[in-house]
Image (cartoon, rainbow, N blue to C red; front, top):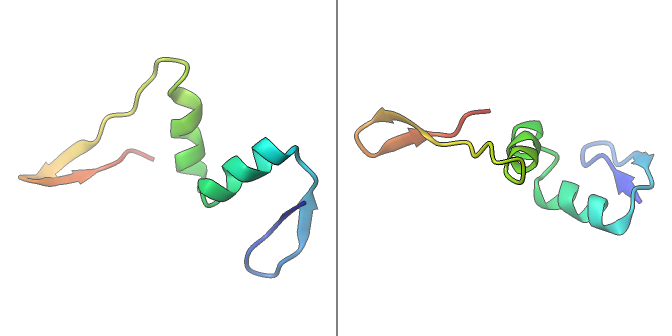
Length: 58
């Protein structure tokens, strides 16, 4: 059973693999988009902001 972490309300009942993936990605839409892009061959690369400082695209 999938639930929101703040109020703890039930959202849906996805399969165990999908629910686990959502939990591991911490319900982060940006992380989910990057995970979807990976098997499609669209690997996201970090953006160099300053020497040694990178930002991941969202």
